[in-house]
Length: 345
Ligand code: FES
Ligand SMILES: [Fe+2]
Image (cartoon, rainbow, N blue to C red):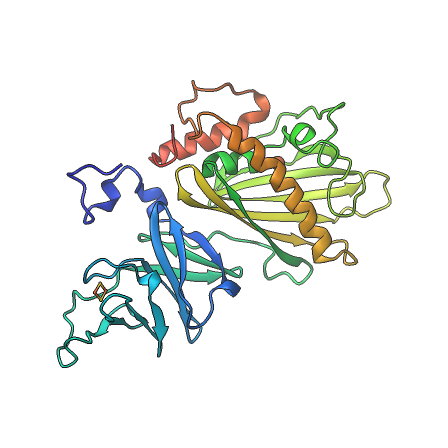
């Protein structure tokens, strides 16, 4: 909640405006859903935005007209400009007001400007930063590799905290329970062997973590899988799953890679965006692949939405940690070091 002393001029000081998140990149839409000449309304870190496209270029602005605070999302695009629905002020792609129809001869002042945010189009998503990112959008290493087919799954809407969602994504010990019969066997849960967590140029990553999966991917065949997890950013993670068919009939090169980024709509409301890269099973269709993802993420949604407290506790004395939670422990420490308060208990 804002207090009286906090103003629009000092957003980084508000409790929900941590620099680690404000100065980060967040996906707010699929690129293909942002059409020429159409305004899309999205929400990020508790702030309403408009996203629109003109001649290929994508803009993301605060959903607010500087004149009297009307919502630009109720307006429209005309000749490559956003028209405010209240008094018809027009804003060009730079966000500058070009026309105040009640005073067509008057040059709008420099202050008559939309509140413009940085945008990148990458991996077929629209990434927005509300601040000044000091780093690039994280790597999706297989994106340019023709040996991998790429798919977008989701988005999945979780009434849950984004950090709990990421922690769930990098947790191998829930498979036999939450994904029984798919990613694990409830009657014979995997023993998670010790693994290490490292810090590198792109955040945290692990050794390969081995599990048995009776229906480990869309082939529907038992596999032995090795997960290498990465937490690139507080809300962006990835794994490369090295799968070997349990009956020994396949090769050793099969990889199922998943890149996920969570859009923090509010502290406990998230949109999960998923990119998949896969170098096996060319006969399998996109439908086969997405159906299985939908099933797995629906199972995860139910469990993550049930967690209490909803916000992720960053004090390690809260909740209990065992050896298999090593990555989660390092993740929580890392979030705390970065000064996270939004969504943190
Ligand atoms: S509020 Fe937008 S033009 Fe007046
Ligand atoms: Fe899961």
